[in-house]
Every structure is written in structure tokens, then in C-alpha cells.
Length: 449
Image (cartoon, rainbow, N blue to C red):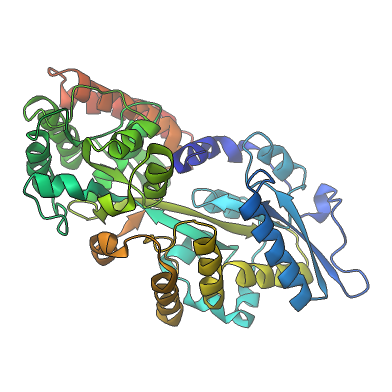
């Protein structure tokens, strides 16, 4: 399942009410300690159908247990199933350490559904090298920490370096502004033979998702919290710029192609087919294009989003169930800092990934600072099997990352309509589309606090 689809499914998760501690929920997990040992229940184990990843995870568990004979890891398959998560949360049946997306911690923290692990972090030095802006996702307003990030992503500009060269563009210098992108898209479309300069989504919530990303790049917001009340914030000059430029590229420049109403897989397939010049994407699109749509790693470059005042970002991590004992919290932090929040293990994991023909050297995740970041860069370079130089513009971009708005998927569905209209109707009224969407989104946000 794609990153977008997984995140989309999680927009409905946190409606269920829950108790505040595991003890009060009738938790039937193993006791915190037994004969001086701790049994820690975790999820994140890849399914057995993903044999290489499944076996690697269990090998890590075995190595961890050998190094920590007082801790037993009870690993459960899966991450976060939207069909079962609310019931598990309400019934106190969550794993001790459980998987979340970056959109989930704020709600879990606000409702006291997770354990504060702040006072234990000093004993795990690796956590001090996590980027503050990434760790902040798992913190409350007072700096209390309730989990750790695992991976992060941010949207950039994915482009076909070969088409850039054919169109007389510099493949090492992707467009720095949306005006530059418009010019580049026209040059690529002018190659003829069905080439599309720039592609965009407009269906199945992906249009609203990309509208949000493009709006962030211009310094805009989809929604803002005004004195405790959320309100739509996209009916503005940046919002108009997003839709007007897409409309102009589609109908004046003819640089976006006649095929529209595109969703997740469409642009990946077009990029793999060699006919698409550019679209907004995360780094993990590249191996999917290569593996599923017969692309070539050497063909693709990744740059920062044009204008770069902000970009949509997200990621995943793990949190600690409410009511955990100090022994379980320490065991959980030992596991997490052994398994992935451990710069000293990156080289070993990269070696394994390289040997199993998985991509090494993509520009994300990047959750570290300082010495840890340097270790990751060195390990990536040592085992890289993708052309890291193609992603240098993205790495150098340092665009501020912003998260999704509340009730994101409902909002994206509304904004899909505006994206569809400007891409399928040359007479679409941008101002009216934004006004209509604003009313609907304000209705969606009315119950958000």
C-alpha cells in the first residue's frame, strides 16, 4: 500500500474514547516483570509474506534479546490497522510500544492515551541527536516526550533528468521557483510525441494533498488555529496562485497533457514510461517507479519543492502505551534505540539492504543531527546502490516541513474538486472554487478543537 493510502486510512482513527491507564482498561498483557525479566509487546513486525524483511526483523529481535537477557520481545505483525486500532485503544489492548504516523501523536498526547518517557531519555544518548523539529512531533507543549520517530519524509520535485537534457535544461539544476517550473514544463511538452511537462493529481484525495503541498511552498496554510478555533486559510493570494498556475499550464501552455483526473499510481506509471518531466513526490517514489514501472535509477533526479517556503512532510514512529511501568518504558527505549534510533547500526542495516537488493542512499529518512547524521551519511555513501548525486539539490534545499491540517482527508476530498475543475474546464472560476471550498472546509473544521 502506498504511503499516501496508508496515511489516508488513518484520518478516522482517533474518534474512540479511551481510558487513561493500562491498569484501568483490564490490560491482559504479560506483567511488567517476572523473575526480574520484562516482556515487552511491540508491533511493526513485517508480515511473513515479506520474507526478507520479516526474517531481518526477527534476527534483530534475537540479537537484542541476546544483548539484553532480562528482556523478552513479543513481536506482533502489522503496524496500525484502521479497522482495529480504535477498539484496541479503547480496550487497552494496544501493544506496549506501537506504531503511529506523524499525524497521530498530538491527538493521543492530548487525550492522555500514551506514556510520558521524558525522564528516561537521558539514559539513551542517541535520542539527544534526533532533529528537534522531528522529535517535537512526539512532544506536548511543555516538552514532554511520548515516543520516538522512526522515519520521515518531505515532498520535493521528482524529475526526469534525460528529458531535462533533451529539452535543453540543466539536469543538475531543477526549477527553483514555480515560474521556472512553468517554463521548464513547456520546454519538455514542446518535445512532442506525447511528452508531458508537469503532472498533478486531482482524484481520490490526492488532488487536495498536492494542493496543500503546493500551497505550503508559497508560504500559505490550508487551515489555521485562531484562538482555539480552526478555520480554512487557503482562500488567499497563494491559494489563487496555485490554482491559476495549474490552469494556465493546462490550457495556455498545454504542458500538462490532456489526460487528467489522475491519482496515486498514474504519475508513477507515466514517469516510469519516460513521458513525464516532473511531479511532486517523496523520495520513496523512486524505487517504486523502478521496481513496478520499469524505470531506471539513473534517470531520476530529486530537487526541493519550487519557491521552498515550506513543504508537506510526515513520517512514522513508535509511542508508549498509557500506564506502562518504568521497567517497560526502559525496555521499550532500549529496543527502539537498538533497532532504529541507533546511528551505530546504520552501516549494518545498509549492508543487509544492499545485499538483499533494496535501495540504499535515498535522501530520506533523515532524523539525525551532529555525529549521528555524519554516521548515517558515511554509511549511506559506503553502501549506496542508487545515484546519490541525482538527489543533491533536494538534500541541499533545507525546505521547512509542515504537517497535514486537521481532518486532512476530508479537506483533501473538498480540494480535489477545485483541482479537477482547473484541470478539466478551461472556463473554471478560480475565485469561486476557493470560496466554495472554504465554506465546506470551515464546516469540516467546526468540530475540531
